[in-house]
Image (tube, rainbow, N blue to C red):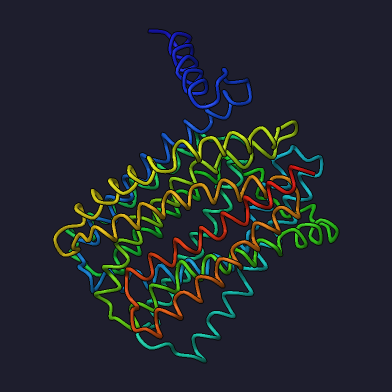
Length: 436
């Protein structure tokens, strides 16, 4: 069986699917998109599956209490990562995906801004920790969170550069290597060395991320330059970037502070239980969506992309696949929760809510990134959708607190409402812009 035969078969399958949903054969751009998406999903899913196994191993070995402590470190690391990057990876994709003639100066300017962010927010974070001295977060845990946050930040930048260079296959391989390293080190620390604390899992994640940064960074080493940065380019990137920063801060706070609040109000054990359902829905859903957006955003940013046509196709997919996606996602969440073990009980309403979140998150993200691809104003409106969503999210949780109903059910429902509002805003803005 030669490669041409396989390619022709795959082309036939793509055309069959395209005909089923849209009534015609796929064009050249669609074929290229499907090819790159397949590479992104194949490597990404393998890597994510291995990392998810590591997460299950950690959760089962650590138990809800220790796993709840890890959740706090992870959440703080995510917040640090947000401030280190400040959406510069998205700016890189926006300005460089259309083969910009100013590639070197834009890349250099983005790298300079990235390094400045790291220095400022490390010192700011340490200063705040010394001033506030948050209860339940040791100095060791805080330093671990900073290091983990640095790892996440550099991973995001390397990931963006790999996408810009269309190195989807090598990106996938780098992620698979990372996942193998994480699992290998986790097993060594837990059973060979006998260190079965949350810090062992954190160290495994950090080390695996560093391996991805090294392997992926070598592939795009030409992108890591600082000579050539200009004040004009920095100013251009900053004015685009500021919209993303607002949305990212809101989005990351909602998806990370909740676990800290759960631990503070309901205890670390409940925090560990919530984190399992959060991981099964928000983390898994976001990762599957990310694998799609990984190719989708650069593709719709390329010159000649027909946004109106893409919008119509997304609408058709929404009508035909939204309910089936909820069913499939809920089934997947159920399997995941069972894998975590008897320490983490199955609640059918949490399973269904998690499945709904995955479906809502996927389509809200697709509409949002399609809106972002149109213009800077579109990117601004997409990020404002997070602000609108957060207002409704906060109002809902306030009502829940007043009525003494705060718990996992309320948090999962609030997350769904948050993404529904964002998705509706993005859809309406797209509809309005494409009419004009």
